[in-house]
Length: 352
Image 1 (tube, rainbow, N blue to C red):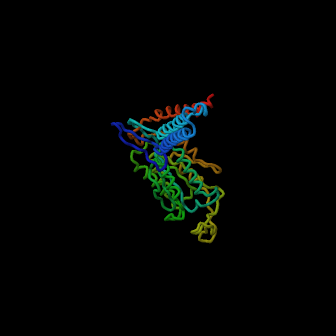
Image 2 (image 1 turned 120 degrees about the horizontal axis):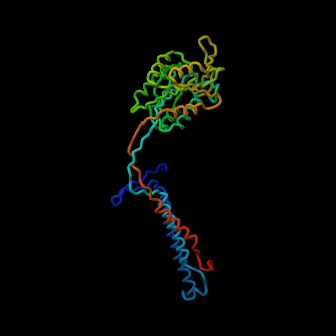
Image 3 (image 1 turned 180 degrees about the vertical axis):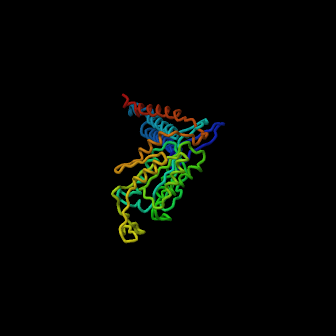
């Protein structure tokens, strides 16, 4: 639908009638104005010719000149544009009801938003790479519901389960490590909250997945309890590692977003953060999931392949009303009129 223009719906002679793209009625108006303009010009031309030459001498002094041919040609063009305008407005008449079912699985993404995700051992940063991974996932999901849990020292629900992926992307853009209420990295709390989101889902799917996007550093140690609960609930964790094995210092920025220094520990030494590949692999294996890592690419494609292999459940069914399209009734006659207008020459002299 054209942005800013709602479809028109009304009843005509007992039938449900509508225009899906009413903005194209402007082309109808243009065709009408074109036809009227050509007709006025033709009448004016006839008046000027009659003023200069007597009617009985027109054939002799102005052979082949036609007053009505241009008027007819312009009218054909105008009427053709009017019909094309109606066709592009997508006229609809009559309705039919259809039962549509959406099948998929429930996916909750647990996104690490701790300070260590600001490290730039992957470009442009770990957090931006995680956003890229998640956007890739949302672009590839087909009918599945997705939710978003964000965590640092604590975890909270950023987006509930929904099939509106654009809404999840909107919530994703608001994630900022500098506004997280508690520092640290509590992977266990994020996994517990992700399970809670799945358990509270309306008409939950048979197969459920938690996609963990993190560098794997866990400073509070609730992982074992969380993975046991997920395993008992038959929820797989598909872990995607973000970062590098070599490690990187954590940059510190001021309120204007300018680099100030690197994060220091209590002894004044620069803190180095590294990807905990073993820890993420252990989380995934404990729940029957898998660990994915692409240092120079996007690993989410493999995650999507894994999700596509899972058993899809009916998540939603609804009755939708579809309108019968009738644009052909206007497009074909409009095309015929335009062709006739091109074939009709404005004067008999040109035809000869």
